[in-house]
Amino acid sequence: MRTTILLVTLFAASALTFNITLHQNTACEGTVKVFDNLKLEDGCQKVEAVNSQAGGISVQWTETLDNELSIAFFSNENCCNGGPSGSRGWGVDECTSLGDVLSFRIMDGSDINKGKEGEKYECRNSPDDPPPPEALTA
Image (tube, rainbow, N blue to C red; front, side, top):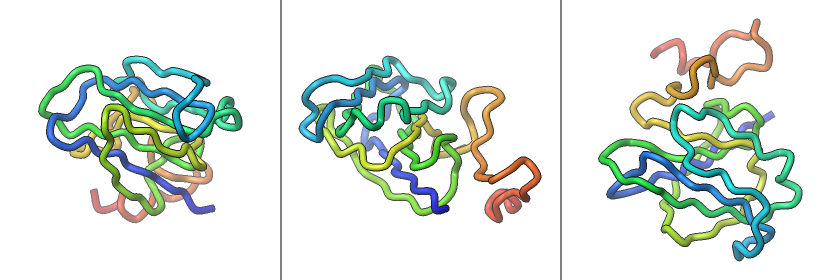
């Protein structure tokens, strides 16, 4: 199974916390779920329970700092770092299609494995699988 990651990199002033809203459609009308004040330490957020009801997603940052934080969206349920990725800048009021997003998390560009204590972001099918090749060179 291929894992798709969409990295949403915030240019200029990056954010310390984010508000993420799932909407009923791609025009960002109707609120399905709101994730308030998400931080790096909050880790993986699963959206599978509301994904079938949501069509659009909007992202707003609440505090600005000079850092390397991004929001990464994943087509798997555990926010693992694997598969193809793309980058996209976000405006405060920009809305985009939710697509096949099943989870997301705040990601530090200087250490993509940094996050909630106890969570692992390497992609493995089972705990016995070897780590991905990029993890062996880190």
